[in-house]
Image (cartoon, rainbow, N blue to C red; front, side, top):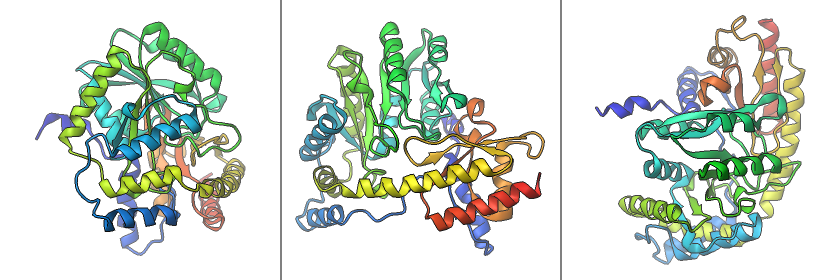
Length: 394
């Protein structure tokens, strides 16, 4: 086998899924709080659009960068919603943001190169950086400061091998929303060291108490590689559509765009019928977004209150996405590790979280990630079981 395969672990949320499936096979009821998959139906207009595309015979290969109609709609959406001035030529459609991450890392990493990523971080960044021979260098997100990045730590960790700075905003797994001050600080650092920024904004429209600001809208001439998609906001996770855009026309960005296009040609094309539906998603009625956020805000407030009332658990209030990243007190005493905590909770109660160290050992250890997507009734049951579990083991 290729030795680089040893660099890949099972993605964290799917790894715990396997353990839960084994328990479920014995008849144990599982309460899944591990996957960021919104359990709501895709809007009917989007479903109708894919049916019409199939009926119309739009089922063959499409251009490798994506259909022109969708790329036009993406560029318009970024201008209208996120104040990012790009054209359709700056956009490439991918099979989800995960493929965009893979394309990027394959294009920019040589052995020994480093990519600065948030700590804790979304696991595919760690996996793909290692897979292509690079080193994921994590910058500190500060729990005591609502999980905002530590700018001094970012600057300290830049060296001659640093190829890019990754921003995940709103953040997975912490749910933080980067402040404009922090975004400008990261842009200033990137400008000083002439390093591009990769800005993952898949949760851009799922925010609660403050407005989202796209990195590229503040960046001026510094190269920003934007990542986004349709899984979350448009309830299309299984449709596997994302996109990557390039906000600058400098020499490096033009070369990067051409290299990523080479990879896109190798994989032929994204799903064709889904792209026609994604165009409708961007251009059509998006009232479902406001309704979704209203529901999620109620659930967020409930789970924050309940977690902070449980002895041994403490958490911040997420400002975006639908994740929460609570701290587990007494790791090393009541539980050996955060992974031990998660698996014992699953075994005894059926409540399934994800261990924080799966999002990076240095800054994730001692935490767990939960979603707050389920109904209030399910949230209450899970919190009751967690509270009882913690009380018994106090």
